[in-house]
Image 1 (tube, helix red, strand yellow):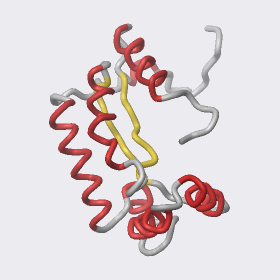
Image 2 (cartoon, helix red, strand yellow):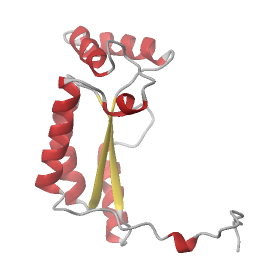
Image 3 (cartoon, rainbow, N blue to C red):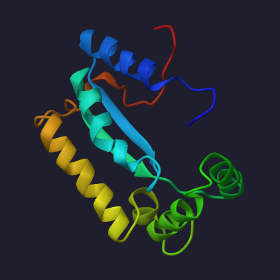
Image 4 (tube, rainbow, N blue to C red):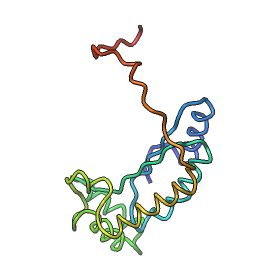
Length: 152
């Protein structure tokens, strides 16, 4: 869906390489687009955790600025049979709009569709994540002065 980015296979391979090297890996599933890719949530979480991911997050789609025009054009051309339905589902996430400035709602959405996405993520995390999580952040590695140098 994202042009000029790594394929899902390459992303999963990267998770595996990092996890095998002992680096804790978190995965962000985004953007979740109802009626288009939300059905992939369980398989994404399963595959990511099978490769060593220990944390999963997600965001729903929001189309701010001119992005809504580009996305709608792409949606109509790529999925003409369901473009109107997907567009309407997106608006249900954001109070009747395709974008949202409300901090809590813009990332996760609001309403029945947002709740079904949240539940699908939570059920899948319970099933595949096995209570794993990212380790606590070690703040002792940071200098209080805030000055950092690249080479020592």
